[in-house]
Image (cartoon, rainbow over all chains, first blue to last red; front, side, top):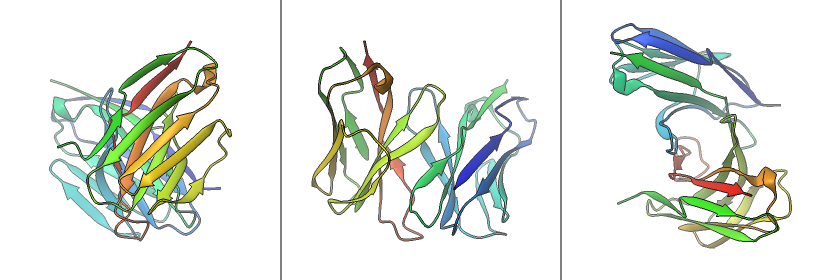
Length: 109
Length: 115
């Protein structure tokens, strides 16, 4: 069964303190690994798609990487506006998007 | 312009009632989805339609029935509402199910509270 586990559950950082979020997955026939950002009371906002091990994508202070077992979302010099819940999801041969429970990130000024 | 919109934003109703949630996307996407996010924040797929055809139907009670009048709309009708149906329901759309075109874009959600 396709499964996604995210860690840590919650992360508190000082502004400028870089860190990484982890997404471990098992999936049959990976079609894509997706990262989303969700602010309170809003729908998930698409960030990245990674398709194969070794692939990396960047957007502003965020960089996503992918191996055969996990993905990392690296946050460099975060700002308070980066505070949100970050969701990881995988899509396998079933076409369904399987989400993890997310990492709640709080960046303090 | 909102890419994926849902109405209503909030829905409070009594057990046993029937209610509908509407979803519209103006992105020209072929595929639409309904998700349920429970109190623990897990997002779970319920249904998916591709060009008005049902392609994903998860283990969801028969009380839930999706309807797609055209590829820009996917509505969710719920009969005989139960307390456990309380959750936030998200609509989403993607260009297609093909790799490279399968990024999903979500609506703002509908918070359903069953009393």
